[in-house]
Length: 396
Image (cartoon, rainbow, N blue to C red; front, side, top):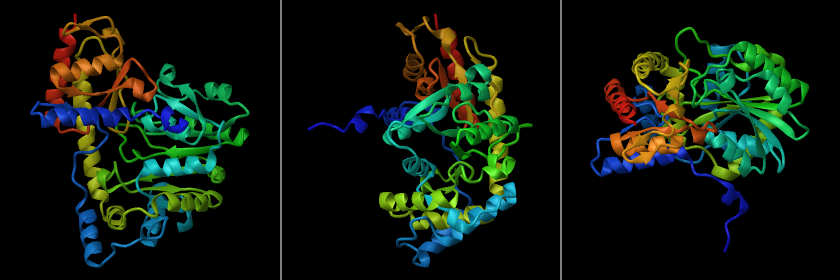
C-alpha cells in the first residue's frame, strides 16, 4: 500500500520535533533548557479556571454548536469592538480547536489545487504545509533583506494569474517583527487590485513591546472587510495553549463555509475549554497586561546577553516572544569534532553539547538562522544564554 501524495509531500513540524527531543533528554535526566516552544510558562488566568470548573458543575460537557457557544462568540465581538473599534456580528465568528485548524479550515474553503498563496518568510512552520494539504503552492516573499518587513514591490512582482490570497502574520513568528500601518495598507491595496483574500494571523497581537504598535488591517482599511479573515485565540495572550481555543472572524459569505467545514472535521471545539476562554476574555485583562510586562523584561534580558556573543547577528524583535538569530558566521567551524555546515547542524551540536534546544531557521523558510523563545523564566534565560555563549566561544 502507498501513502497519498499529500502525505508524502508533508514535512513534520520542526518546532514539535525539537520540543520532543528536548523532553526526551529531560526524561533521561539531562539538564535541558529548551528555547524551542512557542508557549508561555504562565498558568491560565484564574477566571479561566473558575469558568471551566463552573461549566463542569453545570453539566456543560456535551456537544456545542459547531462554530462555538453563543456567549464566547459574543465575547469575541465585544473584544474587537473595545480593542480595535471594529463591529462584527456573532455569525461572523468561528470558534475552533486552536488558531491552527482555523487557518487550515479557511484555506480549505479558499484554495483549489494549483492555486498560489503568498507567504512572507521567515514564516511559521505550518503555513506552507497547510497550503500544500489543500493542493496549493506557496509563493514565498523573503522579508529578511527589507528588515523582516514585506516589500510591497516584491509582492506585486510575485502575483500571477494563479495567485488567490496572502497569509500575513504580525507580530511575526519567528522574527518578532511587527508590521507597520504603511506596510499593511500597501498589502491590502495589492489584494484589492488583484482580487485577493487575506488571512491575517494576529495570535500574538497582545505581545508588543517598546514603541511598537499592533495594527489591524480592517481598522486601517474598513472597506476591505469582504476579503480579510482575522485569526486569533487565547493560547498566547492568556497562556492557554493546551486548552486549544482559537477564533476566526470572516465575512458572512465565508464564515458559514468555514463553520460547515469545521463541523465535518472536528464537530466542535471542547465545550469546557470554550467556557474557560469566555472567562479569560471577560475577566483576565489585568493578567494579560501583567504577563506582557514580564515578557518585555525577559526580552530585554535575552537581547542584552545575545549582544555580547561572538559569531551571531540578530534584529531586535518588537513583538511575540522570539529572537531570530543569524548563525551563518559559524558555518565551517568545528563543534566537538564535527563541522557546522547548516543551522540544523548548529542546533544539533548546541543540544548535544550544552543541552540547549533551539529551532533551526530552515523550518521557517530561512536557513542560516535559529529561533530562540523567551517564554522561559529569567533564570532559564540567563543559564541558557550562558551555555549558548560558551558554545559559541568553543567553536574553532
